[in-house]
Image (cartoon, rainbow, N blue to C red):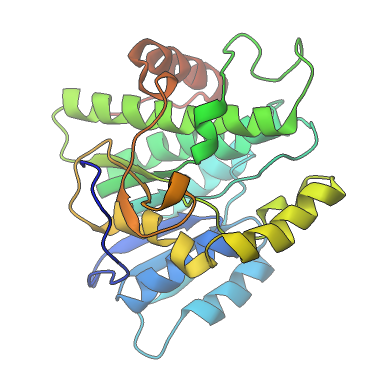
Length: 298
C-alpha cells in the first residue's frame, strides 16, 4: 500500500458472519480492537491469559446487537497453552496477533525462552501455523515502530551472552514480528494460498503495557506521557482494524500517518532495511520452527 497523505478512517466495514480471534484482548489495544469488530457484527474470540479479566472485557465488548463474544484462555508465552487453544478454537476467518509485553525485566518462560521473544513472537508464530489450515482470510501481526532501532541476534535469542537490555529485547521481538510477516506472506504466495498476512503498529498509544517494566520512570512515562502526547486506545487500535478488515495486499504494513508515525489515521508505512531482509526472515523462520515445533502446514 503506497504511503499517502492520510485521510481520517475510523469506520470499520460490516463484518457479519466472520469470526475473529484477538490475542491479548482483555485490555488496551486488544480490547478496543475486539470492541470495534463486535460492533461491526463480527463474532469475536477474546484469547486471554486471565479468563476473569476476559469475562469483564467480554461484558464491555458485547452489545445488544453484536454477534457472540467468546472468552478462551490463551497464554502465548506457554506453548502448551497455545497448542491447547489451537486444538479447541475451531474455524477462524481472521487471526489478530496482538498480545505483547514491553520492556519487562529479564526472565525465561516455562519453555525456556526470553519473555519478549516468547510472548511477542514465538507464541504467535506457533499459533499462526497451527491455525493456518482453519483460517479463511488473513493473519494480522501487530508490531511497533521500535523495530527500526532493533537488532536480532539469532545466536543469542535468550540474551545469555549479551547484557540484557529490556527495550532492546522488546525491539528485537518487534523486528521479529515484521520478518515473520514477510516470510509468512512469501510462503503463502508460493503455496498458491489466497490467505494473506498484514501488519500494523499503533504509534504512541495510551495503554497499560508499560505497567510491568519494573522502572518507576518508564511506568510514569507510560501512564502520563502517552495520554498527553499519544492517542487514546480506540484510535491506536485503528491501524490494526484497518489491517484486519480492509482490502490491502499481503505484507502491507499499516501505521499512523502523522509526525514520526506517533499518531494520526491509518495509512501504509515503511519499515527498516533489516525488516525487509529476506535471508534474515528465512533464518528466523527456521529457528522459530526449531524452538516451537510448529511448521508451515500448507
